Length: 213
Image (tube, rainbow, N blue to C red):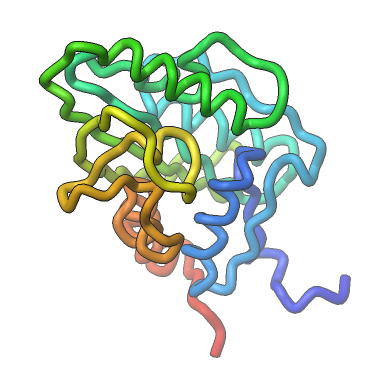
């Protein structure tokens, strides 16, 4: 088809989130892997009815692979706040009632609700958790499953213009929010970045995906 990327090095991302696509594309670039969002195939999001990150990630990856015929990559991630019993957890993307408009509008509503729920809380420990699943095909009996975690705390006000989601409220150990980190640094330290770094050697050793010279 005139592409320099081998077909077997294409993988569909089970998400239409442009932030995730940018992060994952950068992280998989060393393998010569071309990541395509499922939205390029006009594929609707899979249902995510499960209570755990790993179950939802598997459901999304199988859905994307089945409908595209490609290997699939899915990330299910969220913010787990200790004072809220682990909420918003798997409902992080839709913590606030669903809003109309672009993703940034929903992100703002989620952040506002989180700040409201955290009013008066002195225990503000939180974790970003990411579970990433990779499948060779929809019925793959041996999915690759990795997990990443980033510990921080919930700030009192949003700070920073980078990232997306809860990044402006997630304060790192050095006092900066994740939204104040540049893209390269975030990819290196984030929960999703950690999970992808754990996935890369598995793609090399178990799938044989090695970057061409």
